[in-house]
Image (cartoon, rainbow, N blue to C red):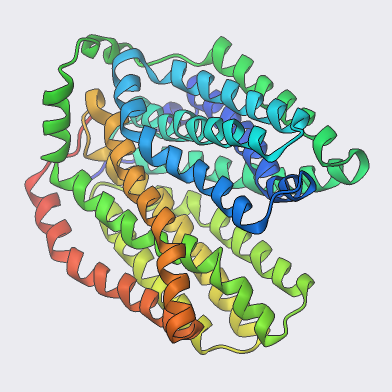
Length: 401
């Protein structure tokens, strides 16, 4: 299939521009909260084990609600879910600001997980609704770029304000950011009129159609392969190895800044390349690049190697995030797009929840580098195995409007 040139008039329509701004605000709020959460939990007397358990509530909640909320959005519209998610972020910040014991952090993490699914997953579905197969990749690239910019701004803003006001008092700023996004989405976002035609649904039939969609199931499996790279290694094992080698805290922090910048910078160009003919190949290339980056981290002992490897891993993550969402929205019908994105992200959430535990056990038993090499081979081998299945599926199926 030959894709037509993207129409910038469609990509720059008011609804999408407002959505990109709303998602920038939403990810600023989340990026603000996440680094401060463990600090607040420690101030309230939580142990490291309890902090880990509280953090897992967020990911576990996302796994549980991803498909149900996606189906709700398919029936009642994306805008309602997005505005609901922003309210969840505002309430989360309020609960954290007034918390006096670790127990009050539980509902905050539950709401953070629900808000993440309702806002970010449904935003991707809405972008898919408003775009055509030819320009959907670029539209998703704009969305993920706004996410990356927000997630870069949030920690910086949180660090500056919390240094002046203290951790808890600074969280009222998150309420203001989330409420600004809520009012913008309430006033200016609209659903695609065609979505309303599908308001009456048979849930059992919809689930059967979803699980029979080979493209969505393959994308979900690829997302499951990606999760150990980011959640199991980059967030968990890389800082430990860097510290064991003797890197300073400043060097470790700079490594992650480089990673974030490379991940954000690649998203818009990858979006432009994520046509129906290429989005699946870019997903698999991202897995291979991620595996290669981990191999260099496993073998590396110097800062330059780590800088290069994390820059490549950031490119890999930004590439997969953009191409993966493009692929799912391209090969799911509008009436199922929310549920399809829910299934895709649920698979990633399962990997995110399990991989830190599994790789941690492997690292304790066989050594840190064994975990790194195992994850690298898992990603590269998985990409090679999935390639013919993706090729056959994209030959058999047509992109959806």
